[in-house]
Length: 143
Image (tube, rainbow, N blue to C red; front, side, top):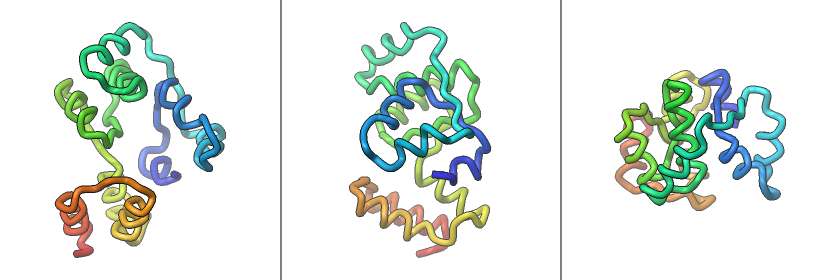
């Protein structure tokens, strides 16, 4: 989780995402609550989140992240889910996903292997298409 801090310094998340990731017993829940490099924001116009959700059928957290990115004029938005990426892209937001984060980390010598981490993510149930998986390994010079 500190890769995000190491790459970006601080990150902004909407209150909706904070609530999603700090609920339950997942080990990351406590880490997020105590991470001083994560800034939690409420969107200025909650109606925009509701409107986006109604039009796109995305989850509240994804909608709030998109609206917050627009409000903050964010450099990038971290989204992995395909439908949410398409909506963010249609709104001219600069998107990065987990694989992009891993590639940045490898390029900055923060990690030694993208493959190991991708394999671990797959083992934990994250779906990564075979084409994207191979493309990531090629970009990381690990294939």
